[in-house]
Every structure is written in C-alpha cells, then in structure tokens.
Length: 225
Image 1 (cartoon, one colour):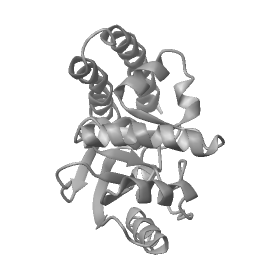
Image 2 (spheres, rainbow, N blue to C red):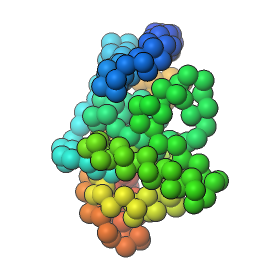
Image 3 (spheres, rainbow, N blue to C red):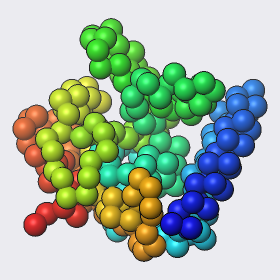
Image 4 (cartoon, helix red, strand yellow):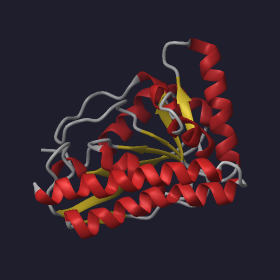
C-alpha cells in the first residue's frame, strides 16, 4: 500500500509537469515535441522500477517498418508504456481523451488517432487519413482490439472496428500479449515482472474471420487454460 501511494504521488506529480512542458514544446518542431512527450513513458518506467519494484520484459522482436500493432489491454500500464515499447507510435484512442484540457491537444499532436464510433463514414475517413499519414512516416499504429481494459483471464470477442481498420490499412498486424493485469492493478500494485510477448504477425488481406481469430488467440497467450 505504501509503495502504491508513493507511486501515485510521484508519478502523477511528474505527469502534470510533463504535460505543461509538452504544451510549451508544441511551439517547437515535431521531433523536439515528441521527444518531450516521450519523457512521460520514461518517467513511468523509473517510478515502476524504483517504487513499485516492477520490471518489464519483452519476448520476441518487433518487425521493422510500419506495422499495425494489436495489443491486449489489461491495465493502464500498456497505455502509458507504448512510447517505450515502440518508437513514436500512433494510437487509436477514444474521442473522450481528446477532450481533456491541454492533454488532448498534446495527444493529438503526438499521434493519437481519434475514434468517434458514433459518427459513421465521415469520421472513419478522417480517422484513416490521420492513420495513413502516421504510417507513411514509418511509424507503427496501435490498437487495443478489445476496445477497453479487460481483466486478466478474460478473452472477449474483438470489437467490430478492428476488422475494418485492418482491411483499410493493408498492413501486417503484430499481435502482442501482455500480463500486466496481475501486477499493475487499479489501486494496489504488486512487485514483479510484466511481460510483453510478440506472438503472431498476421499478414494483410486475410478474410475477416481468420484475421480476427488469429489476433484474438495471440493477444490472449497469457490467458489460455
């Protein structure tokens, strides 16, 4: 409990400072700005290692070039840690996040792709234009295909939007499992090792059912009986 409370105090105090500095960095070029924002993920890892006594392990190797990354979402850990796992990722994110004062503007400039589920074809066109621009820069695109955080051990169906984005992007999908839900709990966090595992690379152009089945199986590698 003491470790967790100290983590929240230091990490979120640092977060406020980094958001303010990132807002000032909006005036600079993209490289300077993104380097500043990346401090958030680095600060998070420092707090994890020295306060929570948590370390992170990666099993497998990320393919080179622009890819579409589908990752399990068990806790806030992987949402914060993406900038450590990947180089300058673009992330499909709920529209609600973009409405957070200042943070939303910083996120959009960094590469968050706003997902407006209720606004149909027009929103989809804008979303795909933003995603393809990021991919053209050689940066990976990331989605949490189950749509929200899922308790460790649960294996729900993928959200319908994943298949549409997969088809329109035409990129290989790197499917990654993560077991953060066992240690990085909403309130009390436990020491130990959080593991990412690159399980499968799904080629573009597969039928929807096959692509979804392979991704669902892969991201749940830590949840199989």
